[in-house]
Image (cartoon, rainbow, N blue to C red; front, top):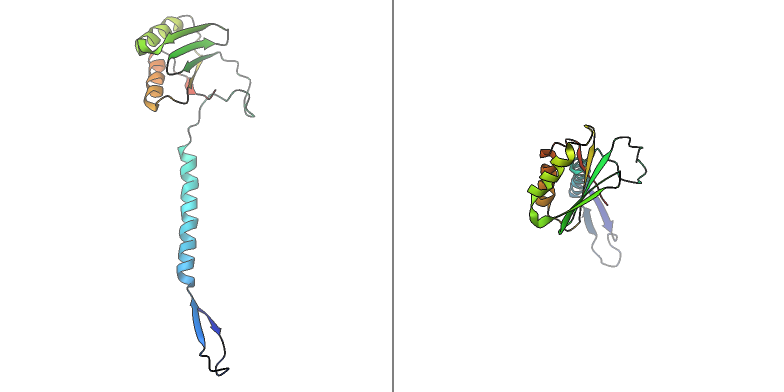
Length: 149
């Protein structure tokens, strides 16, 4: 234990005051903080989802020779577009059946190595995004990823 003595013995009738600095609890608190930061760093790394699709225009964007089909999902509609410039807009009130039918019809003319990028709107529920990804995979497109706008 570290101690700190203030005052002298016999100067002016003051009693010596002995203050102990609690080093052991301080070290315990410091070690807890270090462990918390280490665990948080590991959880942050494990919580991220790596997508096979690179962000457009990002520093790690590579030249993609495989064709990409993009699904823009908003609260009102789903827009299916490709690199070739074609575009099909489906209202969301028709449900996922219309999306599946459109994707199955489109799948007949697409190459086998096509990538599908699902671009959800910020106000969509997680459940709706997962249902859309499941519908795309169920339509015969195995290379599906999420991408920001």
